[in-house]
Image 1 (cartoon, rainbow, N blue to C red):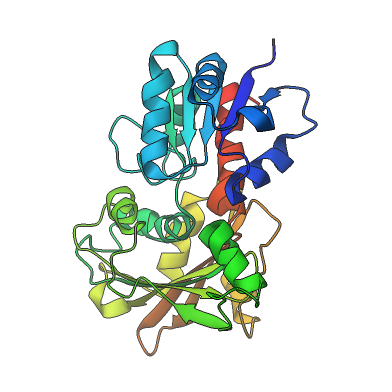
Image 2 (cartoon, one colour; image 1 turned 180 degrees about the vertical axis):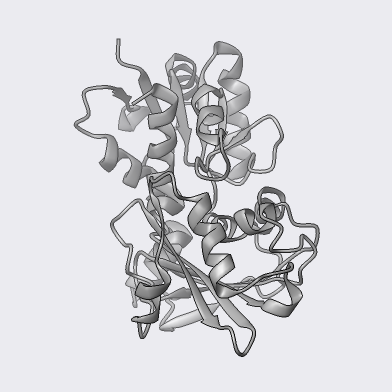
Length: 309
């Protein structure tokens, strides 16, 4: 019998993208609440408890409530909110994080989907920390730009509808100016850092795509750190294939620019190691679709591991 999948919050930006990826599959049964019953808490509870796997595309408090309503029924969860990303009892839904992580996701009742920015940052940082090339207390800065769909329906409307009173006309803007973005805790926890990074996110006037930049000084890194050794550590970590590609140094040297829309419409991620050994400077860059590997695509990848497909 095909596993029953319920998307709680299917009409939000992430939920709609997940639905589009799952529609037409014959290896699952996709559950959907009738439109007239979506605000009925008892109907929602019934769907959550009858599902084999519930994918939560909700605000944090609503995600916690959903788990409380159905965890005892044996429902398995993929939570796309921030609520459980550092919780020790939840498997972190980034299969490429470490050996065995995919197996942990496959067998877990509770899986937390990573944030979009943090997916890129952790992908770059965790392998270098584990290889001893990046000190856990390095004074990191993480600079990133995302497509505006990452802000959900309200931000999408503010950018796409110029008639709104709160319309945003900027082609690019920085935010989280107090340096307290919600993705920082999971970056610290999952990359194994002991010092808070300075994270400066921004939004561009393009719908989907993302670049996450981590600039480093080579003389502050571990012994033997160079562009080549950093690249080798990342390439070795992701050598098993899958959705993360470490771009070769030869290919990188031929590029004049990186496009934040490069990976839009895909569920994969590319990692670049740029820089100048003579200057002792390197810039690590992750390129991904903020709704692909950064959200909905990751949820579907985790679902595939959990149902063995």
